[in-house]
Image (cartoon, protein in one colour):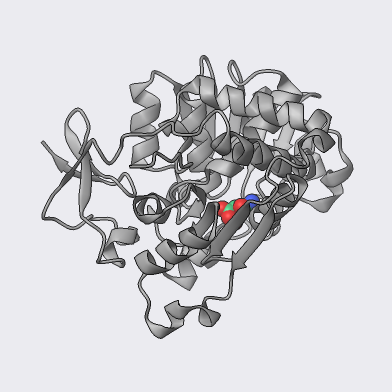
Length: 360
Ligand code: NCD
């Protein structure tokens, strides 16, 4: 069978491969014209089942700058899904027309599921509240460019830490680097997941959870803000309680180090005062523009040195006759998918969304 490489979770690759992707992005950024024919004749397909500005258009910009073409499915009412076509058939068909396929979906694990079906490499453009690996590449590129390292950093994450897939993804990567310290600032209801806490402990990371940003802002090298993810709340009242709780303003900045960097995956709602935009510490627009170089590097490496590098998550998985207990898992709606689970030390986890299922 033809081996293809997907990007579903950055942790599927070893740390060196991720560093290699970042080095490539830095090279591309230095002289973008050198790469203008790299993807000539290739087509990037994209299926966005959820709204997107940065991810979608930075992918488009990236493929155009590499000399390739773009095919996008955004209005699902105009696709055969509106006629009842299954998730799997839609993915299969789009993958037959594309050389590489980006997918964004509201269900956790949708990208992993797509990689099981696809005939071409899949890139995860964000799956539910689970992962957002190309945002992570973008974030890492920005940190590396400005801090010259990805370890030994004091990083604060502030806002909706429960539903933010950029934060989930970034923490899941950074916890494998050395001597990073994590400060999770949120309300009690929007704390990081048990999965992340378990991983942070397993790899011996220092972390604390707190509610007051000003308590630790002076210590931070990186502050990563995020919006409250209104669309993920089941109950409007719960959202009303959380919205507007964290608003970074010029007064907060009086307390910080001069070389703090303030990041945000964007879009923002009201959690960063626009007066801060012109401050040297605000790097979120640089971060958004770095998204193009990170994605150019990824696309070129999926066809270059990463070609055929396979992650073996499916080989490690067992089919079990149980349902994933995560209600937002793709396997709960795309019923044609096999029920796959992989073993960890003392539990099973869902292959698609990583939810812990059984204690063995
Ligand atoms: C994020 C996303 O879609 O997860 N946006 C992005 O891709 N830059 C963050 C968000 O929607 O808040």
